[in-house]
Image 1 (cartoon, rainbow over the protein chains, first blue to last red):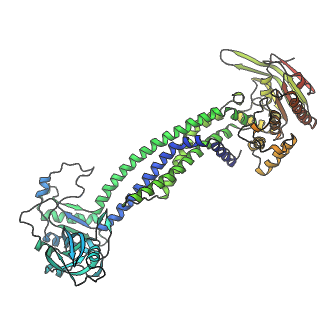
Image 2 (cartoon, chains in turn blue, yellow; image 1 turned 180 degrees about the horizontal axis):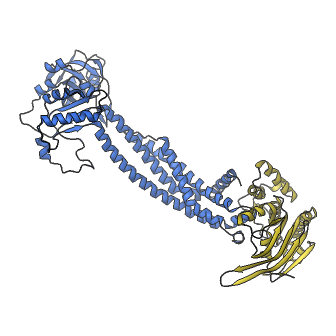
Length: 419
Length: 219
């Protein structure tokens, strides 16, 4: 019998027992559905993480007193908060020294804080941040100046009362008006607007456009840090950008060495500072998602096995019920492998139909979740669908082979007499 | 056409050894109409299974249409069944899920005949047994006589060398019995080799030769 006729035969047989076929595939449906839904969401999350972090500036080294990923699964050391607190703050001079490194393009001292709502002529911009930075700070933080200019060296050296506005601040305080050369008040100081930034959007739900950027020297003039004052996250953050074409690792090596010298660390002392990069967070998050992957593959494997056992069970029942049919088919000339193929195709078809339904429902769930959760977009790469299909077909073959073999091996004389 | 020499069949279940057939010598020529008679337990079913290539003899040789089938593997036997043997059973043994036409088509599927040919053959076979208009009915919509006629049509689909009928009228009333037997008679008169296994004298009388079996031997 040719393959196509066999396939038709299997389809007819499944249709004959519609509700049973459906119930049998439920295990596969649920298994594949879970895999597809979670894979799509995880993949979406991964892509989201990548695009969000590109906002930070993928090459920028954020030099701070503490490492961001201070307690990752691979680094379970006990945190000594006292030690962290006592670490010396970074200074403008540190930034100037770093900028001289041959592998570093710019090293910008920065500091920021929340300043709440800003008001101007009855307009309000809510929940703004004030950030002190220097020339080159637009490069390290991936800002693009839409109008006017960014903070310059002269602004910094002369502690000028100038500011660059984030898109949100500009829109809310000035509306259709051109903000350039107008003034705004922040914490009772008046700044002249010299530039407006392009919109950046949000990063993990945090708005990025609610900033007012001023020269770091101006910032420090009005926000004096008491002598000897230390806090874990306090002090300056130096944002350093490697020169074009210099590998990030090389630049980080230079920065580390210079900072160790400047901070007087002995060869056997650990770093008392952190060189933070976007990559570090990304690889940590990828560590988390890959753990999720393994867990999910385990769950999927279990549900597919359970689904497969369900299929095997029902196929065994089916073989027993149709013993007589098998006998008749053999009497009219069916060979063992015709019968084998007939029942195997039935179980594979059953599993693949389950897989198809599972894929569709899984994609639906992924879409639904991404519609309900604002920062999560499901992504369903084609290979997840292929994977779902492939696995359900494999389950159909693996768990269908035993019942099919049982059917094929039946003795025609006994089978035909079976009541 | 059919030549059995010293065919024996022994069932050995481990505890009991049953000799179902002993030294059967039987020759059936092409176009013959043979009845195999015997009471239950005489071995006529076993003989029919061997004749129909559903089973191998324990010893002896069986040549069917030029093939020595006595020691063939199951798949080879299936091929011979497909091409050279047509079965008609007491219980009709139609597949309940399939229509009459699909039942007749079954042997054609297993002999891998192309779809274009199959339709014509099915129609021809059904009209041969007078059921050309009932092809789309399922077995549960057919009477006993009609079911058996569909079974005959199915048995003939691959134009087999022999038609084997096992108590073909056992489940039918006398009028229908006549109907079925007249179909077999007609097939034989057209040159088909027909072997009927029965315990019924009236059925056996249709045949031109009768072979009596008793305790596994031809008497």
